[in-house]
Image (tube, rainbow, N blue to C red; front, side, top):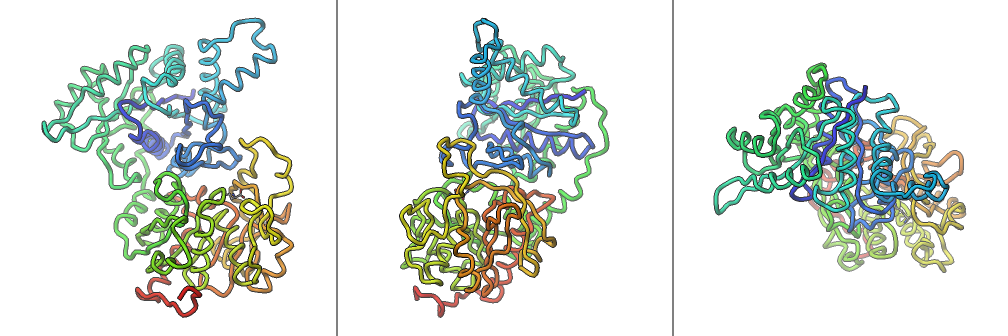
Length: 548
Ligand code: GLN
């Protein structure tokens, strides 16, 4: 029978519930248990696809094309297994389903209410992955913080599940904060007591407390927390601030979080967790032999969650290369022809980020021109690839007004245009070209060498594509389409020949990079940046740049 673990949060947001959930899952997986994680978010959006990154950070895309919370990215990166639409549920999705059923007459004249109809639907979805028979343990992270009005139906659903299944099948791990007051030189447990009290007022008592803290928790303090929060003595876990999120599984193993969970769930301990690959990754991450500076050009760079998967993919790729990847954020709105030399000096690589809309677009094009002309390793993703094509059309092919119709609808040089099957779409949510699609690589290309195979599959999130009418001119001038979707002929990757590394993809490779499977394109890009850094020896060659 599948066991269920719920991870709730108290005191404040941003305590790292996703990382704790992913770390616990990693430990259980490393003990031989088939484990998955799902996230339930209390907001009314049906999914985060329509949310601005300022609101909600990156939108993570799964194989099956679900637009999901960025925590699913952490789950995949830690567990090295795929998630799907079923792993991310929002209040909006739950209500949409219940309301549609009501319209169908499925409730047979009954009054439809939060309890039981909404809570039943939440429970049905909480159990769904477990009922597939694929997993020994399903970990469910509840978004938001205990005490929020919108979290109430979820807490109630978990309370009912615990009552129905028993404590040995259903466990609640509550993540909380023990702040250190400098003036008093003391750790304070009161906020934790309050958050547990709020939960108990709703009928749910946590079984385990994971306490975020800047200072170590001594035995006496742990005892006090256990006593006042009504958990067993061994169930107060210290979660000190870590140097990297990737050390949290090992920290949690040291604190025996996995052991205590298994004991409480009446499950055999299984094997000692096999974390050899994980530790070797961590070792490489902590003790790099070199470093590179990559310019990340985007319009949300001030927001650390907006390009989460890209930043994590750099961490994985850096470790493979035993190289520290310093990411220099460059706001595309601030970048112009006149300041590109200054803003982009000493970069070993340039990544132009995905995005939507016109803000900062000319800065992205400028960054690409600079990287192309200077021979700086360049990696463009999605909008970054599209702008690489616009830049090439303008500055190499001489089509001055070339653009994407997303930005300039009236351009008579639409090198990027809307995909045909997108043209009559009026609904915004979930209607882009989403998820995994096949791609055939060109033999002899750099990307074919990097992947080590010709048939690949990558994840997408876009409405626009390269306009194949321009393909011949592009290829004659050295910009080749080296990855093509075999079903539609859509250009998935372009590569510029006369350059040490100039690769741009319509898909998002960052979504598939994991600790145990770093993405080959990121790894190759970092390697190219390393080589470039070594050869230029701190200097930039300006001769070729038109901005000189
Ligand atoms: N806005 C572009 C499109 O829709 C690129 C999307 C992206 O970068 N994810 O095609």
